[in-house]
Length: 133
Image (cartoon, rainbow, N blue to C red):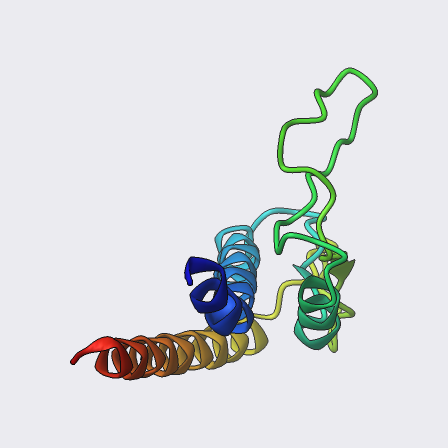
């Protein structure tokens, strides 16, 4: 019984996990808007969701290591591949963060996250109503 409920909610769980991860990536871009030579990062949500739902990942972000001395961590390899975002207008200090783009992406992702939560809540309420005598 529990596995059937878990299977029914699996897609929304993966989507919400990826939305939360994307929100962290976008927040990191915004936080580093004034950092010289920082390159804005993002990932293809649709491809990551297909990968996570297809069973090829657990919806986690892979840890990036910039030195051979870094530890691998326990996050494992997820379906998300971070990519650098191309700047429409390059800045003098080499930073590729465009605040208007980042704010728009952040707000859009937040709306999709809230919609996913609402959908998941309604799906759970429907499941509970079906279980009531």
